[in-house]
Image 1 (cartoon, helix red, strand yellow):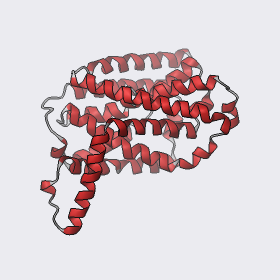
Image 2: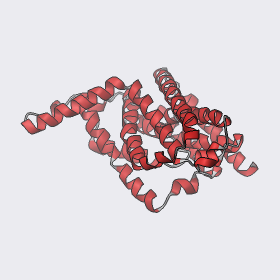
Image 3: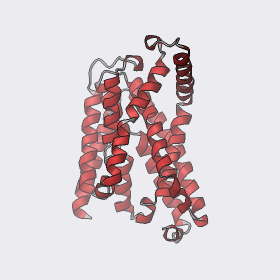
Image 4: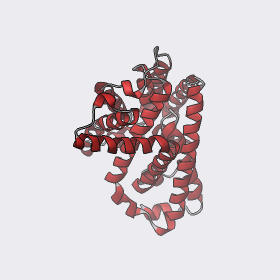
Length: 289
């Protein structure tokens, strides 16, 4: 596989930029990076060996992980210190859950929300549905439309004024299940989790923050499981892989900033329209290409 990629020469740098942009923008904007990767593969004729290369996939997700940590560095740091303080308090016998601060509550529920992903990993170990459905434009198109529906539901939910401290264990589990379901190609992880959090009554800021914090252990865990694939990177491909990584970081930071702005301005509806159009286009292309 490494040799096949190396044959692309300098053109692969352009491919690296394209893939980095799609991953960085699609991972955080509620439009599905997996769905757009397939669309670009069909429309631009991206080499299959690039899209199916696990080492490149790891680096692209590493780029978006770095983007989240940079964009939410204060929240991440407060979660880490708060969680460590909570553990210390538990051992000293001084910690009381009712007195837990916002970041301690968030840290615990991010862990709880990550648990359903273990079930997905187990299922994929025996039945890789992503490989089966990921190349099906019809399925991806339908999932993009489902994403649009979820965004519409979240955007029109009432009483969105709850903060993370008011979250219940069952709600964290449900959001974790939605994140696990969103591993289906074409279904946006961020769009699904943010919309469902708003539907549960959480305000936009809390929904976005919790969604992105959930993504950290999810992406980190997936990368650890496939870390052995990094050795597939050949010397001839290092430049292209690093370009893809850097592009994913920059695009991810831009996407997070844009999402924060649009959600604050209550313009989530634009993503609903976009996902409907992209979904319809994918369905049409399924019968044309």
